[in-house]
Image (cartoon, rainbow over all chains, first blue to last red; front, side, top):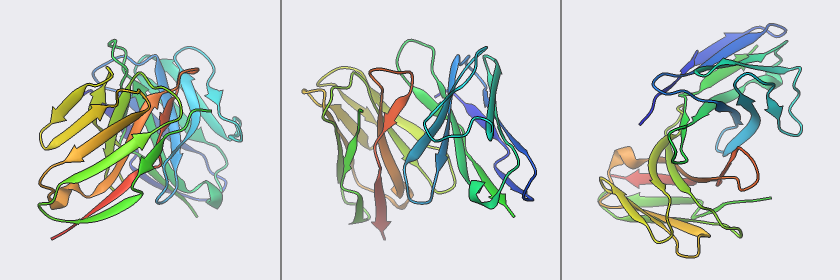
Length: 116
Length: 111
């Protein structure tokens, strides 16, 4: 399967600081990438849809000024958690939509964010 | 909106046993994707289904695209400890770019 790389895998930061998470499709181009948040023992919660070269589409209840998404190239999307607070602590996962015809979605390995 | 339901929510089985789980929806899906997620990791694509009635295998895993297009099934034969994890079904949303995910089936394998 195709590879999606997500970094960092784990980050601990102080309250009030910003954290950037990168999501790269390594062996395919992805016009569309998705960002999810996952709470323990729960399913994936879609935060936003990221389209290359355009503004991200945020799901209802997700603060766009808090979670900045940039998709400047066909292989890279970034999520920046601005002015992080302890309630932002969570597991964040990105995915990239396969462009090869058949509908598929490939995921990064996730980022565990802990805000102190 | 479109929703996916998965059954069972969780299951405990003995090593060596076969496992069956399903995914259902009130609306039609044209693609069914099955994923496995290990703790602290992102979901990994196991099987993709694109045609009603399609039966596809990946090693000990077999998945089927239901003929009504409203359900899909995943079977695991001769379970082993590394099968432990959460299994999600998913499908592309009919009216948007995103994908719909089921709540997952949590599998535990007892030695």
